[in-house]
Amino acid sequence: MDGYELVLQPPGVEDYLRLRIAAGLSAKTREQAEIGLPNSWCGVTVVHDGAAIGMGRIIGDGGTAFQIVDIALAPSHQGKGLGKQIMAALMARLKAEAPEGAYVSLIADGDARHLYAQFGFEPVMPASIGMAMLIGRD
Image (cartoon, rainbow, N blue to C red; front, side):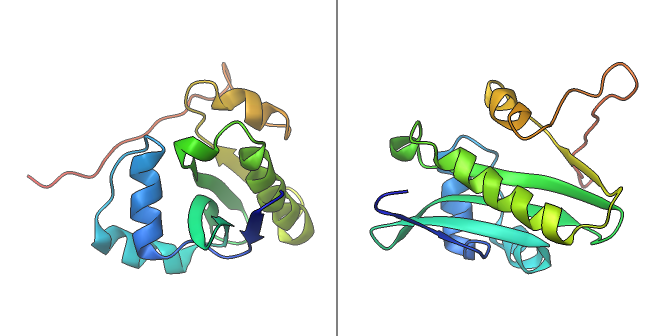
């Protein structure tokens, strides 16, 4: 990772909000980020020239279930193997500290499934189907 530093902590709120948008993920509010980020089980931030340019997090209960979320890289830094480095750091933490038999999930958007497959993730169909919803206020 020549010129890049992988920091073993989630990004700050401003970087989190900015990186999600830059990488094409959905926007989150400041309030959501301020509540969610401190509750990360594990996080990594990639820094280049003093600025956060990539991130990834694991959320979960610490025992039975974990989910890999917020894998994001600024577009100008994509294609350099940094996503793979983020995943490697997250997987190393899971293998070192998650209990045997813990369930680890993620949602793969588009071609990202090829990256995640390198780390042993595979589609769970037909036995399971990923489902999601966004909380709305009536």
